[in-house]
Image (cartoon, rainbow, N blue to C red; front, side):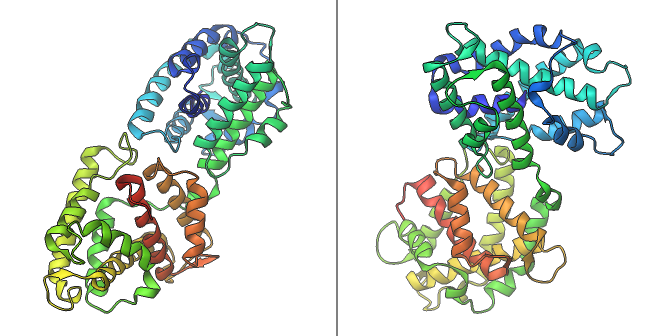
Length: 428
């Protein structure tokens, strides 16, 4: 159900067709529930073995069944699979409303889902439930798109379905989505039957597991703002108290773009006032809907980090303002930008370098690439083709099968610069 919602939200954002609105899709799904969930003899052939990856993922203790608490767990985790271009607040509101309705559906039709009343689902019960979700979604699609009610999507109906799903995949599966492949695997070329649509939705749901719950995810470490803040302060003296090789840590054109933006009076210097001004403006850069965190969390975290940075800057300002003018010229600003990128790289290394060997490789590097893509998807919603953009940044930073702190620093240089066109309309 959630996965169909992703499809719907992602597609509807691009098409803007009134009949494909979230409310209409939600209503169509609800109307289809009784006929599908009330059918104990529902045909599960359309889904094939697509349910198995979900069954294995939800069966956390590996006992061959999915208990209600395990079902709730994987359901809650899937609530964090939000589309790249949808704000977190909007998505959380949507996911919450769907979850509440879906809980009611499960309770109402539990006799058809948990047929042996064991309070857990074996493979056959899980397969039926998975098929019910996909068939209900297919019924909702046909209710809205099959205008002539002939049981097939043809002509303009099929064109709408194709564009609708293509845009949904582009938004919701930025790393692994392949719309053409999904259509081909479901047997759709110029028209679509209800079973083919159900098959597509089934395979799309599997792709969400690949996108958001692949094997890399088990390596994502637990970390908190408290740990991040502590790491910043642990490395501050090391970075700001010693010379920094600009060429090894940043791309100078990134620093120069920030210099031009911060130098509001165009005098070739960034004064402390100008530095504080552009710093305070950047604190309000965030995706619509507070995609990464609530505004309260962002404000609290941002205020603490900003306070720490002010202290770091004041303590080491003589190492930035080399000519003692009280402001930073372009070269001094580059040094400041380089130190900021390098300090952030040390923080990233502290969190991701699980064996403490000073480099990221193997699963550590996979975690870095996964998190950077997801972070960019959330923080740069207006930027096109984020996955390829971030992949290019990795390559430019020298990140191949290993990455050291300087590679991470150069990536930080690139990604920080990407915020300027996103939030300040600055052309790079």
